[in-house]
Image (cartoon, rainbow, N blue to C red; front, side, top):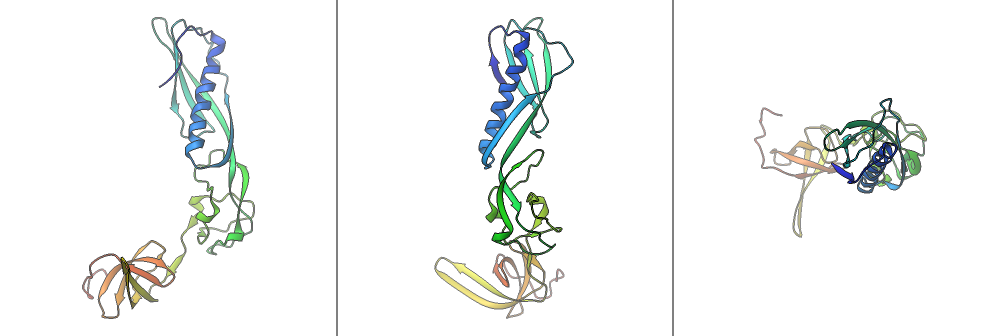
Length: 228
């Protein structure tokens, strides 16, 4: 709950208090979201219920702030004869976010020149990207068009190891690095866990670290494991 006013409040000042509470909420949200150069405004939607003054103190709390484009705040007048009003508040937020600079076919990997930062209305979008480098090397789940906002839900890490591919198994510990050849038994993107048969015929679980490169992450299992 956000304390707003502890003295008498005229009826026409109640929406102003709600607007201030919503403004403070969105300011905190944009500050913590990592958005680049965010700008915003908030608007309290007029309600049909007549407002009343409050002789005690008015507090405002966010009832539902998950979608900035349509938030609900509740103003409460304490004490005997008090009241409780619900307000809809709309926030318009813009920031410099990642957008497509070029058309990109499905499955094609994004390069530096494919993404740029532009000021754009965020609206109800919650998965926008502020740093283009976060998506370089990923690919689209569908074809992406120039000018389209780049969203995390539209992207996936490309498959860099395919089943049956020869891979290099690299184990590092402090300053020591040991590597050996192997064969991928699963397909995987960077960061995925796959099964790999090493040169000795032993099956291990390994994390994909790059194209045709993995690092072991578990004890070996038998070469005849049922999971093969």
